[in-house]
Length: 257
Length: 257
DNA sequence: CGTCGTTTTGATCAAATTCAAAAAGTGTGG
DNA sequence: CCACACTTTTTGAATTTGATCAAAACGACG
Image (cartoon, rainbow over all chains, first blue to last red; front, side, top):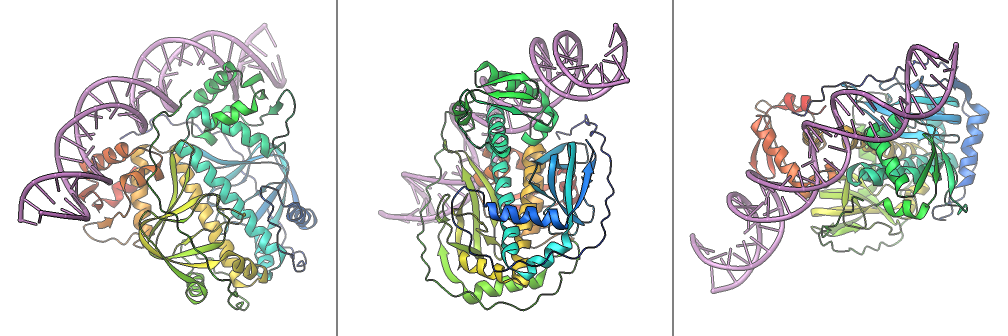
């Protein structure tokens, strides 16, 4: 029943072999004070601490467009922090159907998994640079306790939260709502949360329609049609295929369900 | 566009007020040895450790059918371990659409969140008992390091993994695949992974069709139709609405995509 | 300028939803 | 034990949303 006959050829993806020398973990940091409970504000001190850890003890790598950082089922060796470019993580079904879990940009952490093997793969959407550190060293740090243990836990929990938002989107939102929601969350992810830039803001989308479709659980055609539909409604303007002007942020927010 | 006019009345849910006295966190446990990397095997020692923590320092609560353990946006106070019954966690859209994230049964942990407020709610599907411990005390334990820090990180990561599987299901699987997948994963969650019980196994589903639909991103009608369709294919047998005989586990596995 | 990959648009199709109603199950009180 | 009210589940018919198939438009690049 409902067998998918047409198999989309997955984009050719270069494997990337990474081998890092063993390294000692960075020195443990002292007693961290309890995280302040300010809602919706990113905890910059932990962000900085993570950044420092990767910059000091991480190894820099360049991943070219469409090559993979790691593959599904590959033993987990490293964890990565994106320095530039964009990484997508995704899962594949045997018939080629693809689901993208997320897009990771400068400052984001990719590969935060605890099992023995990655359960999804990570590929570069555009030429990217990342810093890698050994997963093993993170584990040691966590067991050592202190601020770092709680920061890593926190990061994982935040990822889980994002993931649940994604579940809601895929399970219960219409195509229009999905695209609207995507534009808004990408805009805020890019680091321009809701600054009321007068006249709206311009968004450069680094990913293809196929990537958006695979993230949103739709087809390219539907994504494309929804964009033109939103343009017709005066909510966005398409400066070019990948350059969108969010003219009416409020309307967009209303559309998102 | 695509406005949902008909608003499903969300099932009436009793609020539950829980207030626990402050408690001291359990004593820190000593140096844990590195977790063995045996794939797909549940780490029973950490499971036992968590169980012990909740049993020793947790407060027991009973939640009646359809009453809530905690609500979305409520400040995070406790974290819970299910002792009996079934808890569902879900998110609501303002027009009443609901998405269920997961079903939690004996031994499962509910409410593992790091922000200030819950981002989803938890309700009992059937009368359940849970043990609650203060989130604050867990944080202290994590910062203290040791085995517990890594166990909690691990649990959160495992939840994230489950969540990504759910994303794949909602984004890229057909109705039939979703139901097949649900039956299999529920069967293994219930603790009977793939024991080749000759003649198949009987599964008692504690949740309504509405709950399954809201978990699978479908409607009750589609779930019901899919069940009868699977029965017609000889893959399952419906002993009663909530009692399913998985006659052909292999076929079910093939259906799941 | 021609080629190749991406995006848009159009026409048709199918899967799942919606609307509607019958059937089955549950619990209550006589 | 049965009658009655009420909820859940199943089934049917019509409708809708988004998918599929097909082709044209667009853009980047040699």
